[in-house]
Image 1: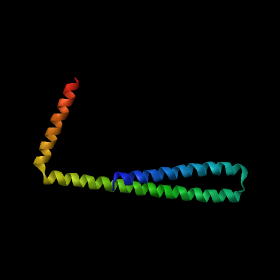
Image 2: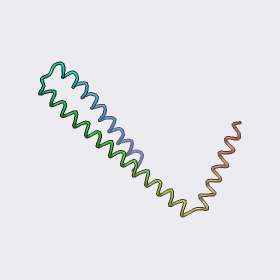
Image 3: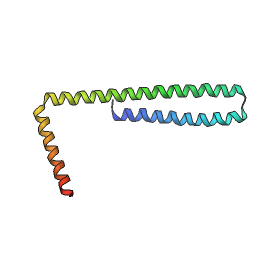
Image 4: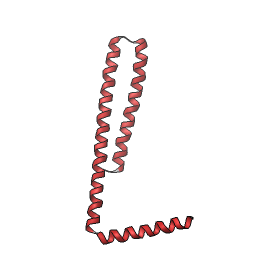
Length: 105
């Protein structure tokens, strides 16, 4: 799963929450002016949005966890397959960061 897909899922969830807010406002206005039948219909619609939003959120979290798990497994495999290169890279990055931090003092 790419960052773009995760961003799209999050945007969809944000859109669903915006719809939920609009429906809540409509529900509050309806309590003042509409009959109990209209209120019941809006409540059902609101429950549907809430359940759908929660399901999409769970789906997005599951995808993010899966993506993190795959990335972690790939990192572990790379380190296990190339321990010397990994060690040298870590030393090089550490030295570079040390020089950068040392220059700022």
